[in-house]
Image 1 (cartoon, rainbow, N blue to C red):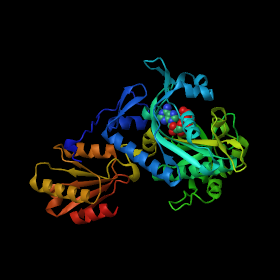
Image 2: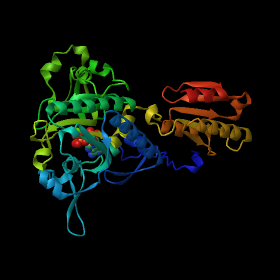
Image 3: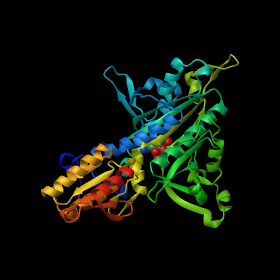
Image 4: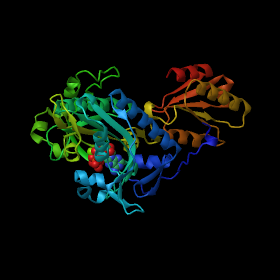
Length: 439
Ligand SMILES: Nc1ncnc2c1ncn2[C@@H]1O[C@H](COP(=O)(O)OP(=O)(O)OP(=O)(O)O)[C@@H](O)[C@H]1O
Ligand SMILES: [Mg+2]
């Protein structure tokens, strides 16, 4: 993409309304624009990152055996009356009336709808296990939307729902999502720790929140530092096999949110391993048994010939919140430092002398060679002073900057800068291309 043809509305000033660094950087780097409180447009750069995150989430859901569907944002109140949640949900639910005076709502979550889909088609335990997920916008009329997309009112969520014959099978489904989450967050370039979380009336270890440590996080958390060193399972993980050892390796280490904190257990850890921190909830896995299937009549015939309400779980990932969470975890004074997997472009190609025939030709050649090799390049072909170009590149945080100017070209050389470390290397054009293609 040539910057001269792109839409990248960079703000030079720091927006006053933004309280945390990710919100400031998202506004300054032209990722989002607020339309109403907690409601945002995604501008080209932000949309690209959102898409990358979505795709990684999707690949890991699929790997774990979940199947993608797409449910609507608008739902009928009728369904929610069946589960009893229409009245319980309160003011966070945005309620709408259509022209026929039918009560509708903008979905804050989809347990009822997916349970309705399930009960319409599935009759036998032989069709289980089943896990259906979608990546769809949600609306929650949060009392205090803040921190940009971190706590929005409209936000993008991946939500998966598992259906099993009994609790033991549902636990296996839970473990598959648990492991998929470990892999997903690792690929997104963040360290998210599963923590014991409040599960309301169900209790026990029926839920974990996946939390990224960040000083600006809204959750207070307590953990054993050893949890930070626990290995993430590889892409070769057998999701049909026994995942309990992987889950146990994580859950054996103390990690809990404030609501579930056990001061005695935490205090029993050696002092140098105790970590009290703040964090951002980027995902949650939940086993809730027959809470929705029983009242809504989602039943299957078991091997015993009897009907059983299915055991369900739900599994959310805050896709849009993750854009902000990744930035909170990965930035410096100059701007965003995107982890490779989610960067909006792989390389920023900087032409230091637009209009100079040799520099323009060298840049055009590099742009073409890299693009042909499948590398996504943002080519800064705008006639602007070098300082401003570097500031923009650092702000938008692409993993590599390839800097091309007449001085270097006179020696047949260009400069390659790694955004994360600031390391610079002078290379021939061929060597630079090979480095990036190999990288
Ligand atoms: N208002 C929001 N804005 C952005 N992302 C959100 C918001 N609410 C929830 N999420 C994301 O969706 C995921 C799944 O939703 P869940 O129902 O578990 O949220 P939640 O526990 O109510 O979140 P929170 O405690 O932060 O309000 C969360 O882990 C979070 O990453
Ligand atoms: Mg949650």
